[in-house]
Length: 366
Image 1 (spheres, rainbow, N blue to C red):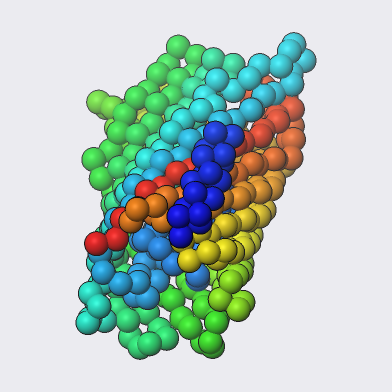
Image 2 (image 1 turned 90 degrees about the horizontal axis):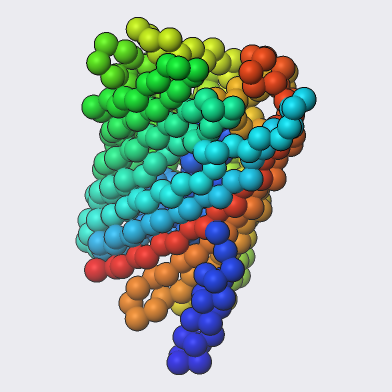
């Protein structure tokens, strides 16, 4: 056991010393935990730790006791645009996100609960001196029901708190809303031995971000994730997920009562996510994943205020139990197709984007 612990510590230290989160389509951020990042967030069916509170609260039914988790994710981006006069970089590249998960599932009960505090939406863009920063935090509270030994459901409340900072020319806006609400519904089903299926629906929310007499209507999108996982010889778990995000409901980022206008022509997106988990030792797990993400920008109308591009994301990670604390690391690299914008003229150019993610989680079971 001491030898295994030493191996785990060595690998974790090597991974931590080498690495550096990435946004999904639009300005969604699905990176709720290091375990999720490690499998490209393909977690709606086979999630097996406390981060089920975010990825699918219904899966909490298969866990036991009280578990808490602290998460940190850092994103580095290399984003630039080639214009007729040069190649300016996006000055809004880097930021850190922190989160918290907790679950309660009594051993003798078929009813439990979960809580998740995350930042599911974030955009940080500064092009040509014009700034668009959007940050949305979400507190999710769910009740979990194990209807049988093979079927569990969850239903809960999502509470959002949104902040927006924008500048356009001489005009500026900096505001926040108090709270907006949505709901979520999760299902986790074991139709056959070694197979699990999952579904999570979130309704999004309508936030009114205000600063004095100025207002931005921020319509956060609905999301639907479906997935299937399969266990192979108690050593491997493979999963595939599809996530639909209704970005077309966000029509603009105009400041009502102000001078900033960002007309958007976003389209809804579908993301494909696949993950592989290898249970190497009882206390040591390896993960890898791949995701393809559509862009909410249309090909001929890149929205530089949002700035997302279609592309691919590769990830890997590992975790181990060290003296009763579960420690997980993950790294992801995203490479995205170049896109050309012609309108508005101030944002015209060919855009390039690469992203790196480092995620770290600490979990404790009580």
